[in-house]
Length: 491
Ligand SMILES: Cc1ncc(COP(=O)(O)O)c(C=O)c1O
Image (cartoon, rainbow, N blue to C red; front, side, top):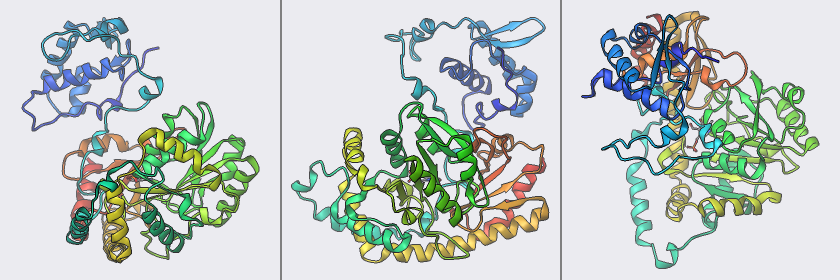
């Protein structure tokens, strides 16, 4: 079957206007790379040179140049009256034996890799590269107490001994886990002992470990619709069967999940601040979810990624704290409260699973860095962490209000804002007929980012809108940025 590539192509071919490489070469390279890694399938139709040129906002000449080259080399074929297609005859052997990039040496043999790894996208979307206004997952790094942190690092470096250089406990350092236990009990109402805590390299590793320990290929798993793309990708690598379950103002719709697949093995959820739409799961839904998990011996994975930041009420207690049957695996991270390059997160594991998780962790990467756990334990124990949260809560509250106000001023009733009560992002929805992916691709690299909402959906009809991070953008800049956003949307 032939597939047409309408607007979906533009984010994949992104021209670097500052590059010394001419446009025709950039277009040629992008197509060739996509064909070779099978992102474009043999026989698939490609856009006409005219429409691609229009999508990219350039003249037709470089597009024609690239197409001619691809036709000449056999990557494309043209069919009279039908258009241009990816060549139907690109056998695997020929691709595997293709000449190397530098100097025509043949590759040693076919590249046989797992189907699961091939299911992941290999290119980052153009809108997801680097810092800039509205970028999601960016924090106010300039407000991080770097002096204090550096002093603590220096103090710890002086204490390094030969004995602290060995492999360590896959669960994490004892001291740090004790510090975390006190924090989680107090700040997140998590019901835990230090022996249940595993220190991990960010929540992403925790999600990966949950998938490895809890799921088999084909296991049905509830995922939020819309949901967190990197959670989806961790699940894709396990080969499980993801079942999208809708979310509404009360979070995951448990009744809908039960209707779709009562016997799911697990549910992966973000109850404190649903990603991306921002709902807080109501108590009745939490109890319903726990009840379902107990009745069906299912697991609940709670990704509690940014609940330290809540602006109109106290932080919401964890779902794990309501569980009396050991069905919840709780995940937290320092990526939002401190900085993501730290790569420190943690899990609270039900006692029945601790040994399994430790064994799988040991087999995958032994343990986390001891050094940074020690520094972070000092940082928390000496009060710097609590101080930093208090300070940044006020800062982010100010940035959030400025953004909400600017959206109201510029768009009035035209734009709906969702999920602004907590965290470091909010969502704005677009009027019908506008494509968030197309607009996002257009603004990429103009100094601000509009992360599209629709790719967060996997099954049902997607809503279009933007996920706007406000953590790294000064309040004073919001009015101007929102005006620029309006310009781009109305263009
Ligand atoms: C839903 C969600 N979970 C977790 C994380 C944090 O991931 P990590 O701790 O691996 O940096 C993020 C970061 O953006 C997120 O959006």
